[in-house]
Length: 211
Image 1 (cartoon, rainbow, N blue to C red):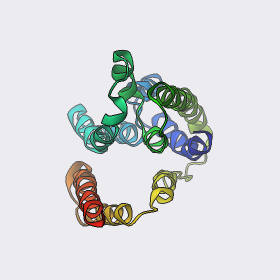
Image 2: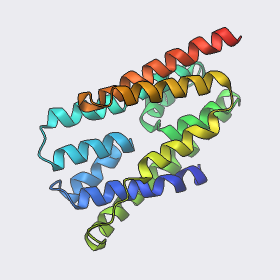
Image 3: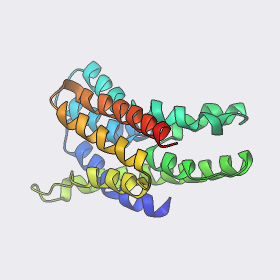
């Protein structure tokens, strides 16, 4: 988790700086890091609320962006079977892209897998709160023209590209990117949701044809 989180630090700073430079109160914005604990959805919600958008619009945008977690959950069902009830209730809150990427490549027995999942997730959660707080503190002293938004796509590229080692994964990823680009004009980033669903479907079909 350490190298993956290093890549997420600029993303957390972007969110903190955004909180510091919008009308959202700093403390409320920082609390959203623990309430949402999903960087892209948090950034969208803070940006929309800071621009004066209705709360409902911010909620819809956050839900659409986080809809990929439905696919994450489906993929993790086999690993959650047989886990204690407390873990099944707590673990979904801690599920982020990095935790999913790491836990999916582990093939440990249930207890060891649970410990690995929690170790990675709690490490990310604690450091995310610290990173966003640092961004809030740095926001007022950064140069006005400085932009860190480019770090957001870089983070996701760093997560996805190393996993593209088989043809079905490549086909699914390319399909998702193509559909998302074609539907980029849809409101509330709905094209991202459609692209993710299409990519998952195409990747699954490619897997079946290959086998």
